[in-house]
Length: 184
Image 1: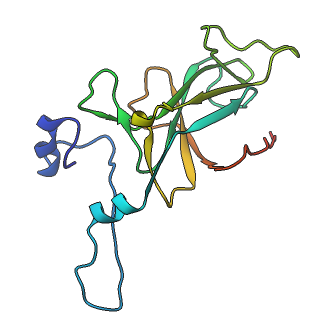
Image 2 (image 1 turned 135 degrees about the vertical axis):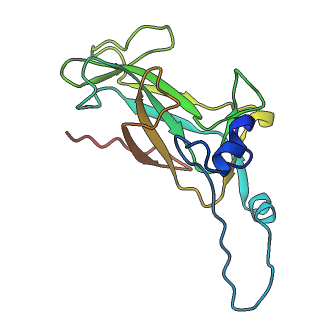
Image 3 (image 1 turned 180 degrees about the horizontal axis):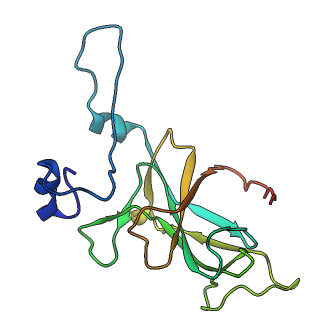
């Protein structure tokens, strides 16, 4: 709870007066055969970071049992990465990308396109939606070198700050796009 986005609640959570809805944090352990103070976390993260942007392509037709008839958001997070919250630049937003979608009565998810309509089911249109973080040099993400996957969280629209009902992992491909694998 240290350095939380809600400064007034920080002390209450630390003293046990207030129960936090979720915990988020990092743990840094360094093992050595010699007694030493070693590197600090800030030294390690400064030297082990790379700058880049995240681009994610999600295909339509994802089957989501339990979300039938609901509007959802697929949120993409990457360990160690955050962007400034557009509503309050002093806060961090860990949701790097958001894919709004609706789930039909059969449980099939359809994404919202950039023009504000839902992706049509036709052979003429491509079957995916792609989004990326900012590509301008000043806005590139600081990505820890050891990160090899992003996390996705599926939540009902409007519940983006609540714990997710469904989640998973997407492997990162640095040089080429991964081929889609389909299953139901």
